Image 1: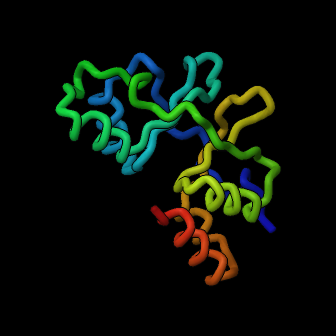
Image 2: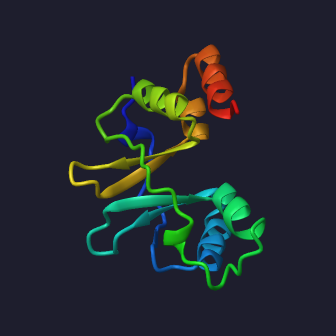
Amino acid sequence: MKTCQEVMTAAPRCATARHTIEQVAQMMKEEDVGAIPVIDDQANGKLVGIVTDRDIVLKVVAAHQDANSVRVDSVMNSSLVFGHPEDSLDEAREAMKEHQIRRLPIVDESQKLLGIISQKDVAEESSSVAATGEMVKEISRD
């Protein structure tokens, strides 16, 4: 069984709490991703939150907020679920199912962001179509 370190996208592009939603949306566009991890600063790289495209739509666009003036810290989810590099892919899949998340940040013992695993990464590496289908079903439930 592969580990998170073997599957994760290493050193993903990150934002800090001081970035604006406009800047984060541009990062998402440039990287072709639906989530941007938020770190305390570039020097430490400690994971403090995550902003998803859904957060932007619901908390900024639908609320008629100005994306150029709304800061990441007012939109990001800081209730973090994360994995560790040595965790198995099964453990990552279970965490994603349990918490209904499509992306799992991978951190070291000091919560420094090392990488991120997406639902797609898990699906591509899974040898069980049934397990992948169950994960998608659980993550997508309302």
